[in-house]
Length: 347
Image (tube, rainbow, N blue to C red):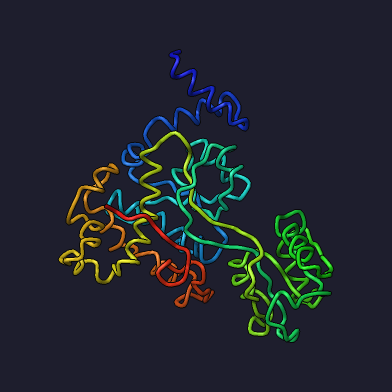
C-alpha cells in the first residue's frame, strides 16, 4: 500500500465517525471521480427529503417537485442536457449523511443546515446556501399580536429534544420574558396540540411553519410572526475528496443566482444568447470556456437555465407567490433587492 494511499485512509479515519471498511469505501468512492461515475451511469443520484413540500416531495405518480429537486435537475441538465436524468433517493434525516459518505448519492439536496460539526466531522462539503431558514412562531389570530416580543407569558408547543426547544429557551431568556414550554415527542403531535388550543403558539423552522399551517383546521385563522430567532442555512452537500465534483455542484448553485441577477430566465435565455451584455455572454458560454474548466460544456449554464430556470423562478414556483405556500423571498432575495443571496461571478 503506497504512502499516499495510507495517508488518505488515515485522513478518512481521522474523521472519527467511520469504521475502517466504511472509511476505505468512502475514500475509494471519493477518489474515483464522481463526474465520470455519473456520466458512465447515465444519471445523477440525488439524496432527497421525500416529505417536505416546497423542497422535496413526490406525488402519487412519483413525480418529484421542490426547490432542492430543481437543483438536482439543474445539475443533471448541466451534465446531460436533460433535467430528467436524475434518480431521487428518499432519505431520512438520520440516514442522509451516511448515504453521502458511502457514495449511495452523488449529492445531498435535503434542506440540511450547514454546520461545522457536519462539515469537519462527517466528511461533507457544503456547496452553498440555497435557502436561509430560521426558527419562527405561528399563533392564533385571536391573540391579536404582531410580534414575538409580545409573547411573554404565552404557552408554546414545540417538539422535545430539538434545537427548536433550546432556541426557544434562549430567545425568552435573552428578552427576559416568561413562557410555558409544552413539549411533544413529534412535530405532528405538537402541531395537533396547538391546533386544538392547548398552546398559544407553535414553533419550528420558519419554512416548515408555512407548510404546517396548511395542515391545521382553519389555516386563515393562524399567522406567522415576522421574527426569526435562529440561523438555519440550508445547503446541498457532497462528500469530501473530489474537488471537481464539489466545484460543479457549487457553481450550478452560483450560476442559478447569477442568472437571476442578470435577468436571464428560462423564457428569454435564447434571446440572451445574442445579448451584448458581457455577464450574460460569459454565463451562457458565448464568451470564455468556463464550463469546460469545470469539466462540462461551454453551454452548461444555458442548459439548466433553459430547462429549470434561474433561482428566482425555482423559488417562486416551489415556495413563493406561484406556490400554495406563498413564502415571501425576505432574506432569500438577491443582495440587489435587499436580501443576502449573493453569488460570485462567472468570469
